[in-house]
Image 1 (cartoon, rainbow, N blue to C red):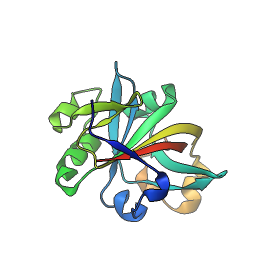
Image 2: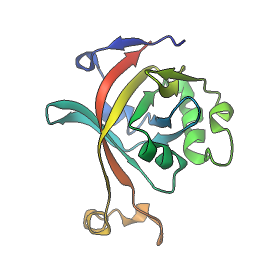
Image 3: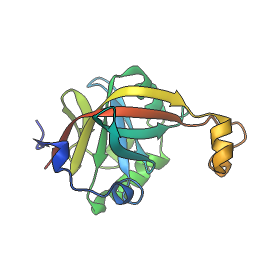
Length: 168
């Protein structure tokens, strides 16, 4: 059992540039049997086709990618400042190689069957609407090739419909 209460997305009072770009978030996908999480500082919140949406980017080399591809739902978790070290660890270590959730001191819980973390101050549950691998032409045109090694695959772009939001 978790301590979250559902709120309307219309009641969210956050600056996505600060929350995502500076404070970061965890993208988590999977189920109660198996899941993985990763730190993200790229993404956004908005409206598409009259739906509240979130968009995220995940490299195919990330372990979380496998779960995001397989599952229909994923969560975005935002944390108080004191969890910055935990988010740093979740961005640097792979769940393939260790139990980074335990190492980060996070407590997994499930909201609507979707994995998230008890320490989060905000949890957004999303349903995948669309995914598309970014292509070299786009990355090159934007002048952001420094984010990629020579043989490193480009991120996959995901649009998720925000189904629910939860706070403490």
